[in-house]
Image (tube, rainbow, N blue to C red; front, side):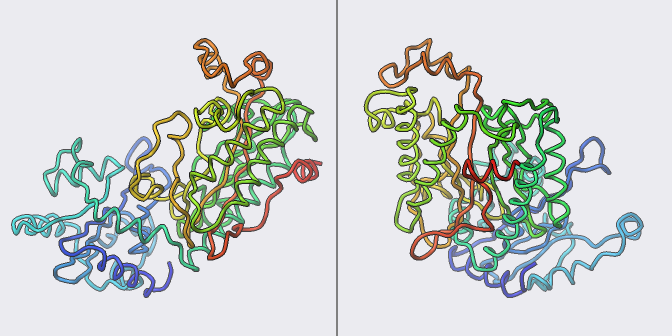
Length: 460
């Protein structure tokens, strides 16, 4: 945890954003895999972590704005619990570390909320993303699970986003720990991959590094020779010379802060000629986007800059044709780059995605509905303190190619004869993490190999 003052200050700043009512913080419970005593890896709710810092099951909390008090609701371990789990600090001790002195039993929370409702007080809560959250809201506030999202507090969402989007120096230090471990994961993967190896061996090794650093994975690892599938979590393929291997993996620190990196490298010691050509186009877009990072610039414009760089490079190679500006404006480039350039990052690898991209990444502005552009999670004007990713890529997705070709889609901009020759190419991307500073940007963590020369040198 950070210092007690960190959490007290965060809650006090939140108080200044909302006038009255009760702010309800739903902590996460255990999630059983196949029976109650065999749960998945535990992860506390990120907003609960941000304001209370306690990564323990069975906790919920409130900030009562009208009565100016903070309460954590939970229960101490029984002797039976201690037999299985060992001695644990009392909840009062844990709460004190977050500056909360008022600790009440879990059973008191429903009564507390019921009394608030009887007085027609406003109970603010954030969008629920777990089944247990919806069930709690049903039991405590009589809100049907299917309607819970309709009753969330926009004021509460905006207030949380307005705090968590701006990373403090101590948060940045935590994120850099996560990024540095993530770099070690990627470098190890580059060194170990060989023809004949199963993808699962690499996935297992990078997870080992994340756990050995004291934390865990920040998201399920993507480790695949089929990089054309953007979120490919299958790890059963045998790698062969001539394949490219895409690793999208990150570490999470014990405090919950995330790193998120992607690397693409040849299974053979060096790239083939055509792999180099496509890699170089994506790399140029990556570097162009980084150079544009600064306060006051809309990330959507940086995304479009990367799109134009990709379209121009692919035009030079014969995949695209016609006017590049118009091709990107109409979305023709999305055949090769159907996703966004990057996203916010912090306590969540896609920071606060459960609160809504329109708030986190767009500051209330409407998102585009255009294919490709609608997948951009971050479009707003950049400000100092933002932490984000840069990850342009180029993908040859056979099903998408077949569909667009059959529909004669964007035939003025796409050379389908050339594209057909690369339907077995796969996909590639590089990803790094950046802090927006007062006068520009800063790479977070130590650099990883990302150029063709650096990657091949690491592979030797």
